[in-house]
Amino acid sequence: MQELLNMLGINVEYTRAEGDTLRYVGPDGTPETVVDYAGGYGALVLGHNHPALVDTAVTFLSERRPVLAQASRQPAVDQIAARLNDIVGREFGTDERYFAIFSNSGAESIEVALKHAEFDRVLRVRSLLDEVEAHIAEVAAQAQTVAPPPGSGADLSTVLSGLRRDNAEAAARPPVFVALAGSFHGKLVGSVQLTHNPSYRTPFAGLAPAARFVSLDDLDAFDRIAEETRTVLRDVRVVDGVAVVVERPIPVVAAFVMEVIQGEGGIRVVTPAQADRIRQGCAALDCPIVVDEIQSGLGRTGAFFASSQIGFAADYLTLAKGLGGGITKTAVTLVAQRRYRRDFALVHSSTFARDGLSTAVTARVLELLEAENGAAYLRAKEKGEKLAEIFHDLRRRFPGVVREVRGRGLMLGLEFDDQSGSAAPAIAGASANGMLGYVISGYLLRVHRIRTFPTASAANTLRFEPSLNLADADIERLRVALEALCIALRDQDEQALMGGGAG
Image (tube, rainbow, N blue to C red; front, side, top):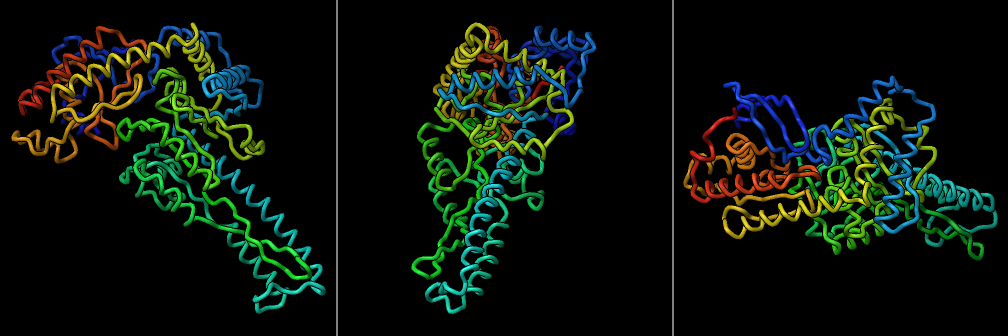
């Protein structure tokens, strides 16, 4: 990583941060100010070191309040869960409550959802297996008066033994998880299997159940997966003195996991029509839907939940990043009451989840976002529209340079055209090697003191995820920088693009 930073000329040490501003001292001792559009990969919804959040943390620590006092009353936790439920009810128009399971990071919140979904699936399978076994036992007790199934070619005892054997094998089938192509859900043992980029996933494929991926361009794949994963228990009934075998489908797909705006996949937005088709597919799979709002949530897109903007209510909602206000690390998995298994609290725990400091900061984050009837969400929408207008203008003015503008609110992606055919060798080489986005990021920082990065699985797409309080002057600064960048790419001016240095 250090070698990459050195190569791009962005190996600087930031010494101060406030709002959307980072500061560092250049090699010659000159103080430099950088506008941070990377925003902690979306975590800095309220910016660096928001004064109210700093005050909350300082006050908490100065009062010597307990950070870790597990198995005790924690009013802040209840307050956060209640407020999140209020927001869910308002944005999705539902009165169903959600249980809140706390953890420490986005990847962990996904792991919690996976674990709970599989826990629920196993219990459902066990319940059905017990019911079928009771039926088999009833028929076995009537063996002297019940004929075996027609065409079975075996006595009733042998048939029932075969049913039990087949059912035990079917019930033990490992789970399948399904996710969207282009997804990113973390890099822990389970979550990495749902992260589509093979460079992250395949080295660890043997550690957890592999996921099946469905492309937004081929949502009929749900039908194929439903057929390929169909598994049944073989139940038995007695009809007119004859044993009749009946198939009882059991769930094999534990969950479908998705982002409604794919962050690392290039800021790709799921449409309402696609969301409806996904709902239908998951109904056919008899599986719950997990919506990953780790990067898109907390008001960044103009609503607290990006999924609410397309009317897509999920069984599980995961939150992290901005939930800690850029100061603490916290995450929450919300589980719909109809799905929640109370015993899950006995089989899952985390030492640092729900710690006092993090929950105090998170409670304050929610207060700030919800203040003045959610004025923060309107700011995100308005600031995002200003940025998007600049991006679309560049796309019109620089065909062959800017390919596409995607996203919503302050979660935007600006995709650049492939430049591997450039007459400038350095530009062509960077593009051919998948490094164009990183070279562009280096240029923006070195020359214009603008900080942003490409998305992980779409390296020609720059992400823009500043805070909800982004200043108009910083928007203008970005416009000037991007225009100069587009001119350099259009003119194939590799000296302008590659030259200069940080500091």
